[in-house]
Image (cartoon, rainbow, N blue to C red; front, top):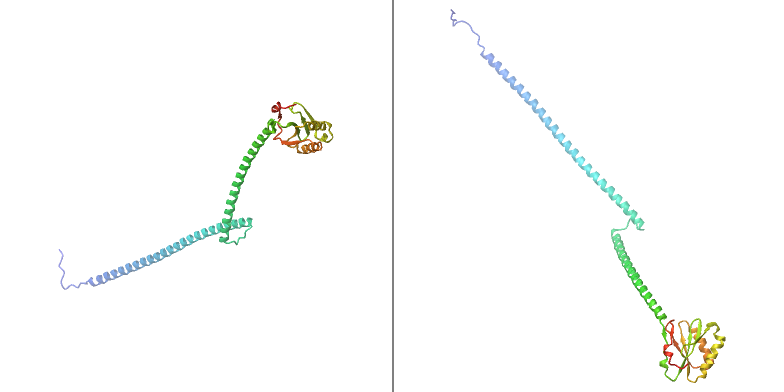
Length: 265
């Protein structure tokens, strides 16, 4: 059985030491915490500044890239403009114009060129119309020539009724190559070559016979191209004092003497 301690027994109290130790430990803990927190805050601030600098650098790089792209686009545009100017210069040189020509002068030249093109178009249109008119005129002339040729080949009717009953006609046909002498009814004739007319005896006999008839009238039937032969034959007729008249014929058609049947031979 234990014995009870005596009140007079000496004892040591540890409360002040533990309190101090607890305070020291608390103080050290606070210091360590403060240091740790301080260290952590410092690193966070540096990281924030570093991130901000990185963002600034990235923004600067992005701006630089954008500016570079813009410069490249301007360079491409400048190269295209240079090529266009060189092409325009070559065209202007080909047209005999200076590269220093102003826009106003170039506009004036373009307007003038437009007017020239319009005039050329109008000229071509007029040329086509002229060709069409010429073609139509050529066709008309061809038709007229055909009709004229047909008229020239149409038989020519000799009708003495206009002379009346006081005259007895004797017909002489004058062509380019010969002179042909007809009887009153046209049923007999003598052909004399043009180069033998001056010395031909048949023509002179014919003139003497006509002159011997008091109511006779020598009528020269003049073909186209037979004027020279007519003039020579007429001069010979005047020398033989033979009354005569002239009748131009409209063509080279055959002579029709059907209205001469009632005439005296």
